[in-house]
Length: 209
Image 1 (spheres, helix red, strand yellow):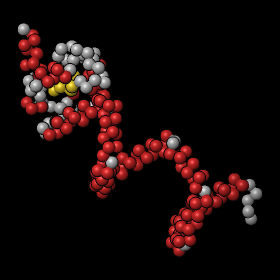
Image 2 (cartoon, rainbow, N blue to C red):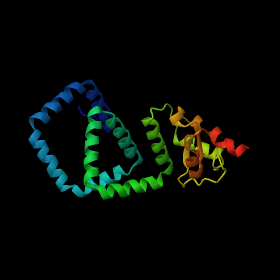
Image 3 (cartoon, rainbow, N blue to C red):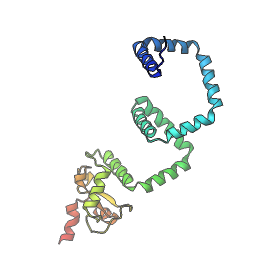
Image 4 (cartoon, rainbow, N blue to C red):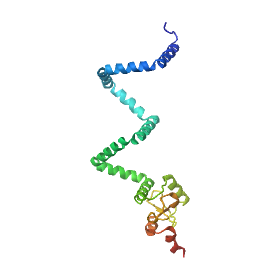
């Protein structure tokens, strides 16, 4: 006998589904396999008939913070897969080769908007080539900038945060210094270039007389 109370009917249906979920899912699977072409045709007809509505809903869904976070996490997991890394590398290389002008403009814009990241990438690359130990974060560089009160470590000239100031190793990498924050100071381009491969103490020694 059917339930007069719709909520009781729904609860009864949920209980029945939980109890027989494996059988129900197996039947659904068998049906989909037996009517694959028919289901596909129905889906295509529905999408064609309701294209505008589907596009609007998808656009609204993609704009939500939850969806953006989902895509971000999914991309992270996908990029860690060995086959995905290889596929992405090939696709990215092909895209750069076929869109050189756009790629250059995009890279140039990113570099202007992220000077701290550009400096860090450049330094990490040099350290990697030199097989140097240690690392640091952009947050640590910003804290160092604040600790130095925005002044060059050597001459005291003010360093504008959006100006290409140099990240300098107190003990140069070429002389065994680590690429860690404890061995790093911020300097104006003139001082860093003048210092060359000397240590900070050696560079400051003539100025202390």
